[in-house]
Image (cartoon, helix red, strand yellow):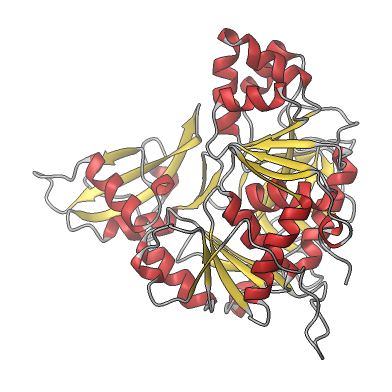
Length: 486
């Protein structure tokens, strides 16, 4: 197959590929370091990557992909229970981590290899008698939270990476001359696939902030970066900071492209940023299972509240509840988004039932997102088909797993979790609790810490509301729409 990273497998050169804080690697240095990783993992089926926002994570992932091995990114903030499930389900034979990184006990039984960003090795070629990695072979297994049960492992093939990144290059006029600044986590597709592998596939440069700050964005964009990728929470903080920060306004006004994703960017923040900088943020729409489906194009209208048009190679349709395709693009008729194309995942690992349920008979993926289309093809997402997926701070969070965690607390008799609008996070997580002892209910901080320890800090409830009972239907199912403010 063709290389995912032509700039690494040709003549790498001395252009900077990656920079994290004050550490950087040229393409030649990245090729050598990734080659060392590739030599360490070649011949394996899957390896885990302790995905901190560091140079080591980027080198680990690139080296693993060069060796034709599937990477399983691990969220360093995951709780022991969640990590235990992911490791049992994906069965990696090795974990790659930065030297000195302290790994949790859930990984104690797994072979470990430290990533040396100054290591040297040849970019791996096929083993004798090996056909090499094919387009349909797995590149990643990325765990995504559904509305019920533990996370499912979406198997993302190599062709999906190439298809999505090349389609975005077309839509965004993305070239090797671009320098991207971002501060996203590297355990999901936004920060890792778009934000690290995207620049590397183009032969460009990525400057990762390690941790997002408006000052860091201003510094990098004023220092030659051309693009910024962020989530709505970041753009909200930018919009709040702009009135008193002329350097930030100057930086954003000089950027070639400002892109928001992972959740809808409120129109209010769109307009505040445009008014202060003269630049409009563009939005795109994707999922773990599909990578990217649509985007506002660099040469198109940056229309607030829309996610643009389908990317090259992506077929998108809206369907009624009964599966009938909606043909009228009137900006009003709501339907579920279904997509088909080379950008799709192949399966949920070890879950043939869930995989079968996710696809239609003619190969379209059922996204569960509801949208309308304007007459010119622009897509506007209006919500989830289900009520149980919460988008908070750029994360997609399943209510079911938080409810399960809350129910493990001895002071909780019943629990329901919903999302409600939040100016900073997009949505905040709200826990509705029926306490075991109404005279001694658990505190909000206690429950938040309880969830954070079991799952991840971003999944903790931001508000706790006490009830005498939860509204249920005749079948015993909680009716979240009947909650006082749900």
